[in-house]
Image (cartoon, rainbow, N blue to C red):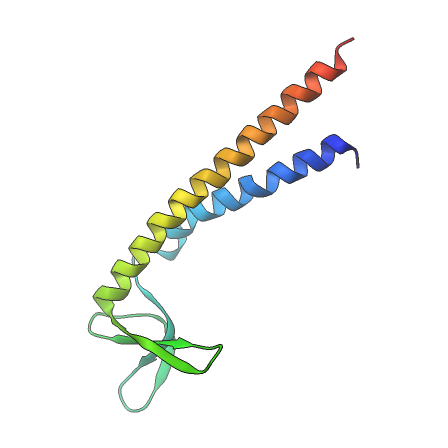
Length: 114
């Protein structure tokens, strides 16, 4: 692979990351997801999408301790804030990659002309 090919690959990765971060909230929908444990009726536990009125036990899987709990509304608000941060970061990644790809393409065109 040429040096230009490495530069293109270097800037394609941020474009892909940016597109992923910008589109991630679209794929998850508006339903809050509990990454910890939702205690159901009758000792049943699960993780995943929450329903109104449920509580999510935020579980830290690294040290095996509970990191607190969130209600349906709290989890929804936390995920909306996270989506906002992801959109901001995704925009920066996409802009960085797009500007880099533009610069590499312009640099390559100028060198080819005798």
